[in-house]
Every structure is written in structure tokens, then in C-alpha cells.
Length: 252
Image (tube, rainbow, N blue to C red; front, side, top):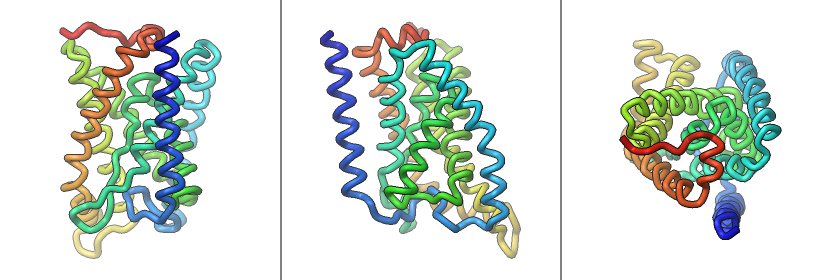
């Protein structure tokens, strides 16, 4: 009972922080979410078409999990709140723009990448509407980079490194590389839409990636460390849920 109470208190704290971000930060952001109307129409439609099948698969996975294990709904909410709070943070970049963490690695490890496609998509939708962070026409592109590429990278990196027997190292690398490769994918999307007059796609990619790289590398490391800290908290207060998900491991 005490463990459940602490979980509810922590979730309430996350919800309160989310409300603060909604009320205190509802201004336009020049962050790495691609802004409303920024992409040419053909590319906006293309990324919507690519992202929607992943979203459909994620809806089926999410429905299955909630039906088979309704006790995991609290942990699902926590994973969504974690993504919302981290990706809503707008941190100044040395290049004069903004960067932010993504927060999708934790949920991808817990529930798989397809579920995080749905949770990440909802996060991006609310941010586009309430925070002017991203956009509706560019939601497909942002969904693909942050809620598809990021979670799938985290999931595969986690299970690859887990073979060494070091779970927390696997969690750190999964969260850090998920963050970094989300930005790499966004740079690819922008370079495809706006190739350089001289040098084409490659020159444009290097330009877009370079704008955020200096800031994003330490951010990725920070997100990896924070995700490990949250995992430690879950091991202390959410053992029942982790056992249900068969994620409690002994360090090798």
C-alpha cells in the first residue's frame, strides 16, 4: 500500500510539472521539432504516409497491453509524462537556436517501440496545439523522427547491450543514442526537403546536423543518466510492474 501511495505521489508531481510547463511555457519555440508549415507540402504528406502505419501498429499493441495487464496503466502514464516533460524543455543552443531531450527511450524499454509511437504521437500533438512546439502539418515528420526512429533505436540498442549482462549500461546507451539519432533523423528530413545549392543532400545534412550537434551530445548523455535514475526509482517502487514486464535483471 505504501509503495502504491509513493507511486501516486510521484505521478502527481510529474503531472504538476507538466501543468507548469503548459501554463508557463506556452510560447513559440525554435526547437528541433519541425515548425508548422516549414516543410514543402509533398514532404509533409510523405512523412504522414510513412508514419501512420507505425501508429496503427502501436495502437494495437497499446490496446493489447491495457487489456491483458490493466495494472500497467499507471506505468504507461508515467512513460508518457516523462516523454512530455523532457521533450517540452527548451534549452538554448550555442548556435542561437534551441534543443531538447526526447524522453522516449524509457517507454521503449518498458513497453516496446510501437507503444511509444502512440504515446510520442500524443505528446507531439499536444505540444503542437498547446505549446506551439512543432506543428500539425509537420506532425508526421516529427512523429517519424522522435516517436518511431528514436524508440526503435532505443529498443534495439537496449537488447543488444543487454547481452553483456549490464542492464543499466544498456539503459544509458539506449536513452542517449535514441536522443542523438532522433536529431540525426530530423537533419536527414530537413536535408531531403532543402538540399543545398552546392553539395546537395550531404552538404545540407552536415549544415542542419551541425546546428544542434554541439548542444545535443551533452543533452543525450544527460538524458541517458536521467533515464538510469528513473529506472533505479522503478526498481525500488515499481518492482511488481517490472516483474510483470519481465524486466528485472541481475547485473552481470
